[in-house]
Length: 222
Image (cartoon, rainbow, N blue to C red; front, top):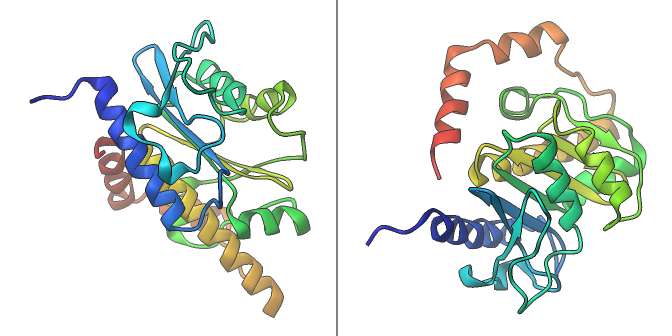
C-alpha cells in the first residue's frame, strides 16, 4: 500500500524526532520540527517530548492562512517561526529547531562560527547569528524569517539552532554538523588560536563535484 504524501511526512517527522533526541540535541519537551506537505506544514505539538510524538499527532497548519486544522493538541509555541520561514523562502521543505549544548555555549561567548572543516563548508556554509529575542514571539519569528533567504543554519543567542533543508534529512544533518562545528571550535579555542579555512579554501570545497553530488543525493533521499 502506497502512503499518501501527508502520511509519508508524518512518518519521517517521527523518525527524525527520535534521531534528534537520541543524539542529545534536545532534552525534555524542548525543540520543535516541521515539514511541508503541499500547502500544509506538519508541526510538533506543544508540550510533547519529540521522541513521544506518534505519526498521527503532528499538527496540520495551513501555511498561507496560519489556520490550525487539528484541535486535539496545540501546535508548538514556535508556530510563527516556522510559518514565517516557509512563507519567506518557499524552497524550504523542512525546519529543525533544537537546543544543542555546544551551539548554545558558543552563542554565549562568540558572535560567529568560523569555517573549520570540509563537511561544514559543503553541507552548511556560513551560519547566521540572531541576537537574543524572547522565544515564541513574533519578534523571534521575524528575526529568523529575515535570515532564511540567505542562510540554511541560524544560531539563536542564548537559545539554540534553526536549520532548514529540501527535506528533513538535510535539515537534520545540518543540525548535526553545526553542533559538531561548535564543539570543535570551542575545544580548539580553549587550547589556543583555531586555524580556520580561508575564503579561498572554503570556496574550493564548495566547488568540488564530489561535494555537489553528495548534497544532491542528500536532498533526494528521505
